[in-house]
Amino acid sequence: MPETPFRKPRVAIVFGGRSSEHVISCSTAGSVLAAIDRDKYDVVPIGIAQDGRWVLESGDPERLRIESAEKLPHVDGSRPGVALERTAAATDLVVSEPSQPPRTLGEVDVVFPVLHGPWGEDGTIQGMFEMAGVRYVGAGVLASAVSMDKAFMKVVLAGAGVPLMPSTVITAREWRDDPESCRKRVAELGYPAFVKPARGGSSFGISKAHDASELDKAIAVAQREDPKVIVEAYAAGAREVECGVLGSVDGPPETSLPAEVKVGGDHEFYDFEAKYLPEQATELDVPADLPEEVIAELRALAAQVFEAVGCEGLARVDFFYMPDGSLVVNEINTMPGFTPTSMFPLMWAATGVDYPALVERLVQLALARDTGLR
Image (cartoon, rainbow, N blue to C red; front, top):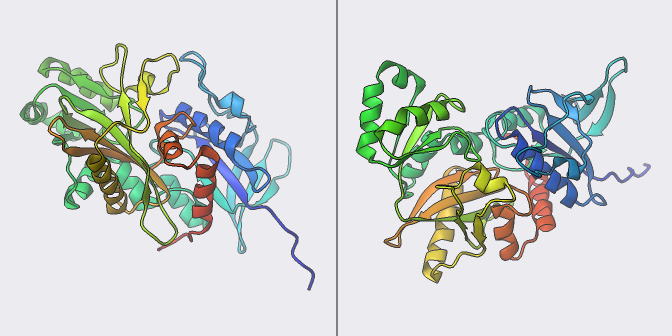
């Protein structure tokens, strides 16, 4: 029998997407494309344009950088189309161009979806990968969906005994049919309060309602991103701290040293500009200056959250460190910001895992995991 020729594992980096976090996803993809080991993997960049078209992207990391609020990256939807095609033996990448017959790039071994927000981080694309029988980086369908929807995330975490801030959910129907009842529930939480899209990220659509007069406008802003809105009590005097979590093949998850976000300038909270624009005054303390016993409790709680939602691959768990010394979970993010200057990679670098090693570990975790029930 002739020997099968060696073939490098093919990794498809999927980015962009239809959500308002398209820009963030492009920036993340640029970082991953620059860091992944091209000697070890055959890398294929796949962009999802904002209208939903899948295209074969250039993969130029420089084109995908966020330079300023006026110069933001996006997927070029005019490029050749690409699709996943399931055959009897494998899942192939097929490229189509006008006036040209379709051509096959070959089998996909693993997809690295660096998508943020709806249609990418919420279980939808994970379900497609499962049906296509292709391995992928990150959380599965249920964990992605639960973690994306803050209302259901809180139900699951409360059931696991995780400490959370008080909140109330306002659906589009409730706000249309009985807005006074909604306003009353928010008043019971107290002001100020944070009004958020229930299924959003990167701080898009979030407002701080200082009093009842600002609530209606804040709900309208949130509903531009999601018809379902969650309103959360203000964590007065709290410090914002975060912890990275990495899954393992057959053992418990590992956690990073925590870090702290210190929002500066004119920002009242960690909004989009404070997170992503280079000229902002936000400080990231990595690792966070916390008592050792608090760090130990925080890391254990981050692992508990990761397992409570059935997460896989990676996640970032965000906390409030309250003035009384207690910890409260804010949320879990199953595809956190992933540029070298994002909090998740910075925390792991402080823990001894640099950016290229982090990318390598995630790809290897995905290659070791089967699709389907597990």
